[in-house]
Amino acid sequence: MKLGIVGLPNVGKSTLFNAITNAGAGAANYPFCTIEPNVGVVPVPDERLNRLCDMYHPAKVTPAVVEFVDIAGLVKGASKGEGLGNKFLSHIREVDAVIHVVRCFENDDIVHVDGAVDPVRDMETINLELVFADLEVVQRRRDKSQKMLKGDKSLQAEVDFLDRLTAHLESGKPARAMEATGEEEEILRSIALLTCKPVIYVCNMSEEDFVAGIGRNARFLAVKEAAKAEGALALPVCAELEAQISSLEPQEKELFLKELGLEQSGLDRLIQAGYELLGLISYLTAGQPEVRAWTIVKGTKAPQAAGKIHTDFERGFIRAEVISFEELMACGSMAAAKEKGLVRSEGKEYVMQDGDVVLFRFNV
Image 1 (cartoon, rainbow, N blue to C red):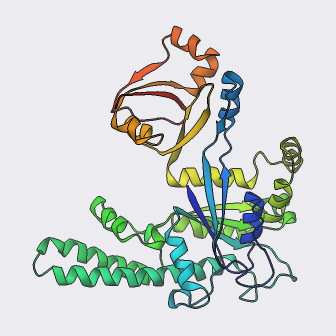
Image 2 (spheres, rainbow, N blue to C red):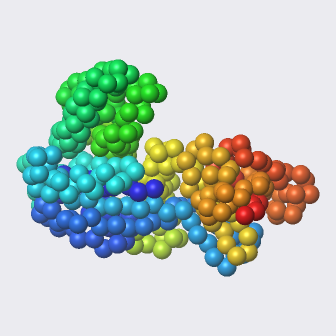
Image 3 (cartoon, rainbow, N blue to C red):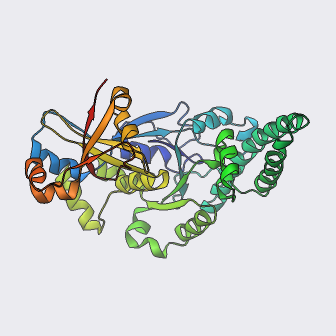
């Protein structure tokens, strides 16, 4: 999973990126502190791996990972090349989902590029630049389809849809908020629009507002409402708090979160939201050599899941020996689970479930 962190200059993007990746990316009080995108790879928190390690005592543990990309701050006119617009847009095209950081805190020492804090306006600023960029792409596709229509009347439905899509974008709405049939969804996927990418709006709040209660924060509630209208998620975070949390040892971190009345850090909540947004799950492999989590799309069948490990596993797939993580833990060992007949033999049509502990059988 590759998540791109975007936002206007000085909203806390790089501070958040540093906190969740400990990568040491530059963070300063001026626009375009980030020019080339910084990249950090973060392990996905998964308590199931720890419990499998207690059972197998493996030589190696490999969690699933998330790649965070800190992309340069955007300004008005980016779709026309203003600021670092063209680079910014090209970097967004490469990620699976967008983490859009909006500023919900007041601080006279940190300048706002538009002079005042208004997170919904900031959302609209970036979204409009992405919409303008998408309009150019859609118009080119529409012109091409219109020319081909003379020889292929079946393209009329596509031209009609692209006209509707153009009107939708011109109203300032992202493509992901548009209703479409299955065939129209295929067209959208083939165009690969920026505003089709899933979005999580991260509301960067002050420590005081975050701890006092996010449900009473007018700026967060406004962002949440605007996000819901376009089919996106809104997540409250305090980047400064995350910076403190990231420097703590695991036991200190747990105690610190408890003192704040939090069950999870912002990073954990962000990764969880990303998995849900992209429809991802993890299956597990376990043994003395290695305990490992593998990320797949929900609905993936066993042979394709096996292919995540190695293409030979998919090509020569015979069967998958599967047990749910909960059943394995209840039995205490794989041997005990087999004695109870809980380890199932699944074929090529089996749809993998989150938390499946699997051994793939193959022959090439």
